[in-house]
Image (cartoon, rainbow, N blue to C red):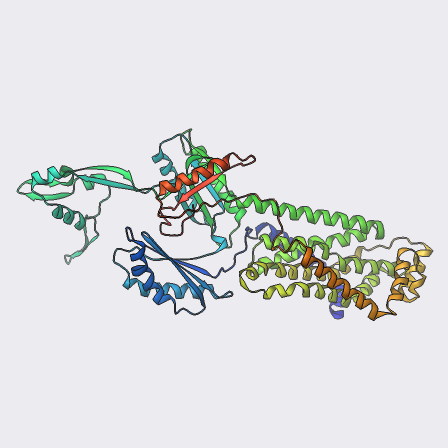
Length: 619
């Protein structure tokens, strides 16, 4: 360390250029580093679901769950497997040991599910394997509502879905409250009988159509041509003109036997905004992308489409559950805390040591923060709630080393030493005490890195952040601040009494000091003569405080209570309820919630979406 300090003063310009580079790169990293609400951690849960329309819960357990359980139970690292069978659907939740290899576990589960597919019924849908991740939750919900036809809302939502998914940072968009469009064919039995066509013959003709026919190619020796056989139904006219029976020159089409009309499938979900029917688009970002920038791009896109897309005047667009607002508020609080810390430190240091010294000490706070954020970006991490908490927690720890070094340097300059010599002596003299103090602080937080379970995966970002920022403060205190002080440092005028106090503090009798410092040193000199008694009193106080809190305290919470921007109300009910029965139950709760004052937007979701039909319901 001493050699490093000597080298820093020998190449002061290089060191200061490095400082400017770190500050500039740290500022760029702060502006560009991905920002999200919750950290991207591996939750030891993998969800497997299979859908089969019309199957009973008993058959779902026997035909869907048991074949998959037989294959999945042999996966390495599997802690527990839970299965749920219901009408038309079966799901399994696999819990792994904390600290598992998420990629390998997901690969193993998919391999076992592929093996089990051969034993599932032929009409079962493709099994879905999904991992649970905080980063895959929606970052914003866009709702479309208004007094317009339902089909128009569905059309606008589908158009927005395609355009939002085209944004590079968006992973997926799930539409809630819409219905899948279909073509309904209603057959007239009287017409079937009049044409002499049986129902089985009609079904056979329909089943044999709407297929891709690979007709191959024709090679004439002078050219090679692909043969295309039109077999896919592309629109309602194709269905209407589908030939069912041909006799001589007469052709009986499906339109002669039935009526064809556009309609929708049965509802899987309802969505409302402030009690008004709507269609919602839940936007999910890609892992590691910036939440603030992603939501800004989504908002800008929708604003452009709404303004220039010739939408009907009755369509209203609203945004809810916007995580970027919460993250932006936390970043503003961090900036306010940093500015307030710098101002308070400078006020105190200016009063004690002068304006220049206060400037040097104040520089260590943003310098340490920018160094830490730059290191986080280099290691591929993001700014999230836990990282911000660690940054705010470290504010009061970043200036200790800089204050000690600058105060000692000012003392030496007051004794007549040149500023370069004074800061060199200060950095060398305080190098090991400051290093030991920083290491002691880190030792209190490093055990959090070994905290097991999901909570440990969640909280490990705090000690990592503290290591980065306190390392930056150590470099600022021992290298950058002394090198800068050796160029611009200036001693403050002191009187004779202060010089005598400084001499006493340096090598004289500490009991000769006056004021509060003298009183403290005299008390300390008496206490060190009776170490065992002092230690005994300290142990008694420690045990007493812990015991009192254990019996009379208010308990322990992982996170303190604070004002929340969002609140969720879940409605659960027993029985195989239809989607309309579920909606009626939720409406009763919704009516009471809407009467609560202070609610800006109330977003209601009932049931499943068409895309995630077969997953766990969120009512």
